[in-house]
Length: 171
Image 1 (cartoon, rainbow, N blue to C red):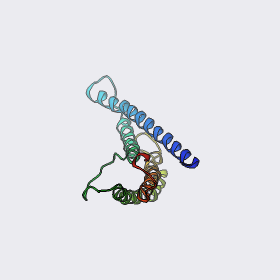
Image 2 (image 1 turned 60 degrees about the horizontal axis):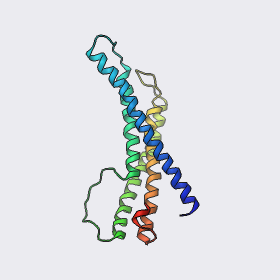
Image 3 (image 1 turned 180 degrees about the vertical axis):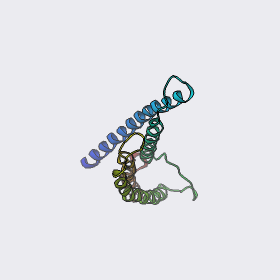
């Protein structure tokens, strides 16, 4: 592996670990507003907080998008087998390449329209919490860019496997 490939791989690994930490923190953070909402609903001790539902929803959006980024890197996303299992490694790599290119198209759509969506959010504020909606809507183009980077990594592996320059263990 070249030096550039090693640096790229270690950078992507570091970013991947950061995503996992962020996902964990967001899941822990989401517990607070949900717990406040439950306690305020079923007890007279805690006043009703209107903003808790909104903050929980915003955390949930980020949890979904970061989770999907992680799933693309781990290849643990939803898959459907439409064709019989390939007989050779090259056939499997070619099938994976087609799937990864299709996923790349979805990532590009998320990037292009996600930036428009984020720009729209820049001009809006949340009703309850007053948070600028850009902080929520930016999750979509960021997910698209991250998917594209992780998919590019997979596409390179697929091309190497098709050309016979790599084995399954080098993914």
